[in-house]
Amino acid sequence: MSIVGFGDPFVRRDGASSFAEVTCVRESVTVRLSVLEEQVKADRRALELQAKEISRRLDELNHAHEKQVKDQQTYVSADKFDGYVANQDSWRSKVDTTLALLEGKSGGVGLARAALNQNIMLVIMGIGVLVALGVALYK
Image 1: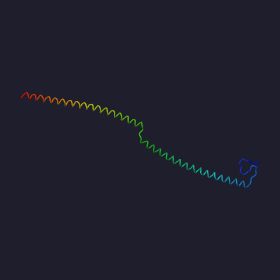
Image 2: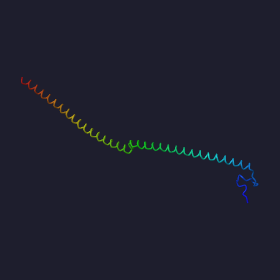
Image 3: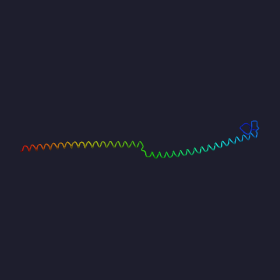
């Protein structure tokens, strides 16, 4: 029993085949095979080029990541900065309070000094008036 009609290119449906038909089919198969081999070679070259490009991009990403990590080490985190600002604000508040107390004390001392100087001037003027009166009376 012969298998006819199931894709055998060398056998016709009626079971007979000619040499010309067989030669033509062989050439067609050979050409198709060559085309497929070239397609496979081109696909392999494309895959190799694609693998090289992916490798290059991955290297660039790795270097960019390393640079980003290195740059990030130079930055201060928001939490640390907020803590620093709060510490500075607390220190500034204490300094302002201390300066206000010192200014009040020195202002108070300055006022007392001014009052004392004024009183001394009044006492000296009073002594001067008394001396002038005494001199005028004893003449």
